Length: 134
Ligand SMILES: [Zn+2]
Image 1: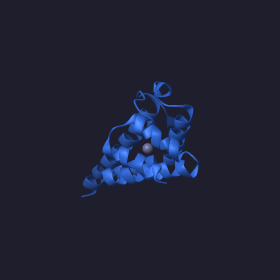
Image 2: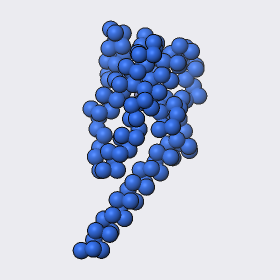
Image 3: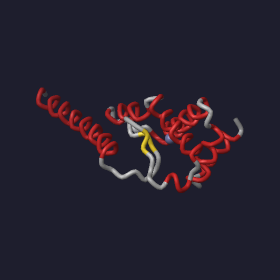
Image 4: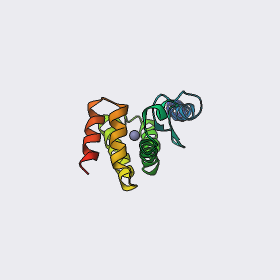
């Protein structure tokens, strides 16, 4: 019995290590295809200035800082380490929280126009609509 518990503990340590490695990989090596917060800093794709105004880029950065403020990367990592999937509903709520952070810092209108330029996904368009009504 002791050996089984030992194996399970080492498998879990391996799983946690794998998840930490994936966060580190995303923060260092992986190319940036879309704006996101990698757990340490906001990362923006090089093509973003071709599409967005400087005010919209500031709004996107503020949104990404909202993810930092609310510790989204780290809470999702903790959930994955406990074999819990953060899930689409939680991710949508996190996007709204990050949007609200941008609104609180005066970037609501520009966040809405950035969302409309960056995505045609219904969730993103509904976020833009929500921001426009605030
Ligand atoms: Zn976001």
